Each structure stands twice: as structure tokens, then as C-alpha cells.
Amino acid sequence: MSFNLAELLDQRQGENFQLHSQYLNPQLTKVVKTLGFDRFYVRGEGCYLYDDEGKKYLDMLSGFGVFALGRSHPVIKDALHQAIDADLPNMVQMDCALLPGLLAEQLVLRSPDQIERAVYCNSGAEAVEVAIKFARASTGRGRICYFAHAFHGLTTGALAVNGSSDFKKGFGPLLPGSTEIPFGDLDTLKSELRQGDVAALIVEPIQGKGVNELDAALWHEIEAAVHAAGALLICDEVQTGLGRTGKFYAFEHYGLNPDIITVSKALSGGYVPVGAMLTSDKILRKVYSSMDRAMVHSTTFKGNQLAMVAGLATLSVFDDEHIVEHAAAMGDLWRIRLEELASRHEFLHVIRGRGQMIGVVFGPPTSSGAKRRWRTVEAARTAMFTQSLVVPLFHRYGILTQVAADGVNVIKLLPPLIAAETEIDLFVDALDELLSDTEKSSRWLMEFGITMAKGTMKRTRSSTARVMK
Image 1 (spheres, rainbow, N blue to C red):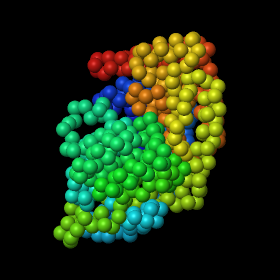
Image 2: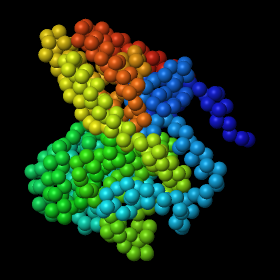
Image 3: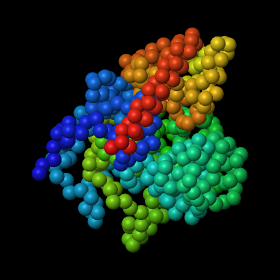
Image 4: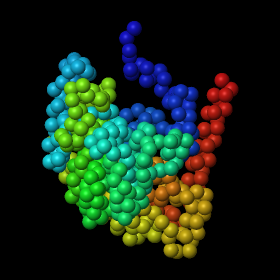
């Protein structure tokens, strides 16, 4: 019996949410249906998604930054077809294949001088796990410091350095000695470092949860304090790396020199999961210190040939299409357009971020009518105002966005790095019109309420139907 993908998709089309409710995460199904985001997407191309009714959606999430080159990039597709047709001997394990070495070479060449080695894994969270292990092994110390509001991942070690108590609830105790530092609090950091048992400080150069930044001078003081204490600086570039902020790495904006870098997401080309921890020869040899420790850290899918091809093809496109330079130019345009919008709309307060990683920050207005509407929305739930914009942006304008974090009035934009002036105009014009509505009346709020009510009713009917079956 042969496998026919097109036939399978045709036969089971429309069962998406039923299958997820029954076999995967039923709570996610409830969230998506309540927001009215339950679409049956059938195709993705460039910056856009298409559903089964032919409707087009501008994707401002890009898989949380995975689709740096957009969806279905022809070069990545062709490279993977070539790899499959070549029948490459994959994951031999007791072997040193060519392609992992070639990708490591490319990553090292694009990194600071102190970065000389790569260790492969399957995801950003796993890259963070590797970084924690290597930092502890190389320093002989056990404690990892991290900043409040950080993300870093949801596996056990990565979760230990996650700045959200909501994510941690119910999963403790976690990594012993992990210590949270208020974001950018140099004095508290120095106090912890003086104890002499800190292996590393792990940071996102620009925090994903809220798109929070520090200035270069403070970053330099933080780096100096870490190194003076004999600890390591880990820069988590899983989301900010590979051009997202208009530099290959976000830490380049601040002139930092990390001891360890973690990358993933965009390196996949949007097709094959891959992650890597990048570090110095000295740190790596503290772990792989002898022949009998050659496999002391490993993972089955490290160096997967298809992942290596996806990574190499992605970096090739970055060079050929000047992706990093384009992201920097579009970042300037984002700021110009959104700051002009902020000058005209009292709900829109601040624009954060760099390149194609943008935080649109909302806050209370000053005029009495608008202030009253703000209070009404925020009384229901903290940061509900921003969610009340995300929903109509999707339903009315076909733009997929997300709040930057729970309880934060920030919309985070992570469009594909190939997004250009056309996509910026689509978003800015839509937000302009929507904010005008919020300042004039409560029509947008009624629209939001109706959408949520319909989504809840649809979700309830689906649940009832499953019970009756």
C-alpha cells in the first residue's frame, strides 16, 4: 500500500480541531476557537497564509521567528529536494559527516573571534540546555543567573532560567541555584557574582517577552562584571539571531562578546528543526576532554543531514538576497511609520525593538472618553486592551499578530525578514484605522465581544457534539 499525502489531506480536511481536541492539547483548541482564529490553512507562501476559502492572511508571527525567509522559499525547497534525492547516509552516529562540518564552519565565520566550535541539537530550548551544561562544566560552578521577564524555553533546565512564574507553576523544583535578577539591575547582579559560585549569566540581547532593551553602556558594565567574576556570558539568540534585528546577532548592536551563543529558529529555513550552541575551543574541550568523553553530551538527531542542508541553504539565501541589510532598512521604516502613528493616537505610547522585531506598546489615553473605554477593557483583565486589537486585526484585516506576553499591553511583530514596505503599509494602515475607532466609540469593543462570544458558542457546540458521539 502506498502513501498518498494529497489523498489523505483531501479525505481528512476539516478534522483539524477535532483531532487536536481528542489527541493533542484540548486547551489550545479552546483558545484558538474562542479568539475566532480557527482557520483551515492550506498553503503558505512568503509573508502570507491562505485558508481553504482562499482568504489571504498577512503573517506577522512567522512561526515565532522561524520563517525568516518566508514560507516555501524556493531555494530551501530545492535544496531539500536535492538532499532527499541524493540518498545521503544520515545519522550514521559513529561517523564525521561533511555537511555538519560545513554548517559549523559557516556559523563560526559569522561569529566573533572567540567563537570556534558548534554543538548541534534540535531546538532553541535544547540549545539553552547545552549552554547551561557547558557553562557549568567549564567553570566548575553550579549556579546560573538570568533576568526577569526572560523566556529561554520550556524544557526543565531552560524553564529554570525562564522569568515567568506562570510557566514554572507545577513543574518544580527545577535547576538548583538558578537565580533571577531584575532586568538590567547591575547592583543585584554584582551581589550574586561576588558569591563566587555563578557559572554564567544567560541573557536575551532583546527580550522576546515585551521586546525589552537595555542601552549599550549598561550592557558593557554587565559583561565586564560577569567576566571579572570568572563567570560566562551566554547570549540567547534563538529568536533575535540570524538577522532578526538588522544584525546577524542582536548582541552586535551593543558591542558584546559572549562566551556562548545559542541559535535555532531561522536556521531551519522553516522546514527542518535545528539548533546549535556556539562557543570557544577552550570551553568545548572542558566537556569533551578525552576520548572516553567524546559522547558525554550528544543527541540522536545532531547533524541530521536534512537540517544541515536547510541551514546551509538558509545562510546562502541570507548572503544572496542581503537579508540582514534588508531587515535593518525595514526596521528604520517600521520605526518611522509607527512613530508617526503614535504622534496621532493617544492609546499608542512607545515603539520598541530593532530590525524586524518590533514591540508596539499601548497605554492609557488622556482624553476622558478614551480613558473611560481603556478602564472598561482593562477592568476585565490586565492587558485586555491589546488583545481587543489583536482579534479585529485578524478578523477585519486578515493580519495575524500576538500579544508580547500575558499581562503586557504590547503587540509583538515578528514578520518574515523578507517583509517589505507593502507589508508594513498593510499593518500600519490597519492599526491606524482600528485606533481611530477606539478613540471615537466603543464599536471596536463590541466587535471584539461579539467575536469572543461566537467563538465560545462554537467551542461549546463542538464539545457537545463530541460528548453525544
